[in-house]
Image (cartoon, rainbow, N blue to C red):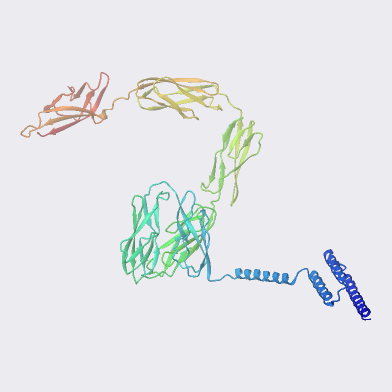
Length: 609
């Protein structure tokens, strides 16, 4: 009985479990009919698990399987587990916080950037308020020497406390090869309060000097000191002289520094005018007024924002360089106060273009002659056009080529900001006229060491090809071309006497002409000679009774003469003259049988014993 009861109970339990399982499976299958294949497979596996344990009486196992299936179904419904969702939320929150931190940078930090101006890149620095910039490594730039770091045209002091974003620029100097010729300091006298600092700027000349190193010294470091960069620090009341010395050749410049408690500090600066319009090449001075009027140091430095547009001198003279707009800044040497001038530079506009008429041979070329007014106009490019290219063409440089006999108008056009400016001229193309002959003209005589011009005349005068060749056929001297049109040559006589035969031959037709030149020594010039009679007083101091003669030629002793004729009396070389014969102021010298020089100056010299 008990065995049957137990069997019956087990049968009921199994049937009940199976019924529930079947019911649950049926609901699950109906609910997830549209899920992914992987979900269906997993459901089938669960059913197989349940069927495999139908004989198990422990109902808790079945409940656990149901709970697992429900969790799986929920997981696959969302596509993500709860943990994954939490992770995503955390990552998004971190990204948002970082972005907020980046966008809300601490205002107590400032960025200092380095503009190397063509050198290698220097990393920027983030500096806390009132901290100092770390001195970076010197940049390098091919062909240039690094001078230092500058802000607004002044050497940057790395002891400066940073209170704003800053851009520091590198200054370069060309590695020139010139020797140093001098040095200057931007201030000759400086008045500052005790504890103040000012940086002096030394300029080594010339600009392309190879060695621009300098040394700074103070005459009294108890009053003011100076470092290797020219930074002056006032120590105590008094005066000191700051000296800068070039490394090469030791050139010096000085600045007198007065340290006083009575220094009147600069409070401001104004410039007049504040706007300026000038043309390229023009210059105008701008006036800077420092306040107060009794300020001790009224020194001002001038800088340009773009030297390719406008430059400014140390005295405020602004010069237009190129078309555009630039800002000129005046900065006080005391207090670093600034004022600016806006400069607009306009190019010089063309007013007119004139072209000269031209005649060119058929199949020949000729250059147009033209003039642009004013001569300093910015645009000088002319666009050329021929009104009839069958007669003549013209290239971009104004070279005309004759194509056919006739007349044609050539038009030139210049375009600038003032508009179009035209100039025109008639060009006549003619048939080439052949050379029919040539004549030559030359001097009959040329003195040794002298030059002379030889001319040729081409026949007919309107012949197109007037080129010739010059040649020394024989004799002394040399010949070379002096000009092509008109054809001329230069003959140079040497020191040798003789004759020279010179020829000229035309390129067109080979026509030839010759001339002969006689080369002779130049005639003597009486002014080149001097006759001196020298006498000596006797022991009692009486005037000499006779004089000894000497002759000079161009200041040198000359003995190559035959006789001197003085007061109609012949006196040979080394001859004497009696005192009784002394009269007249000139004489004659007979050099040879054919040459006698008259009016030679005579001098009388008396010497004492």
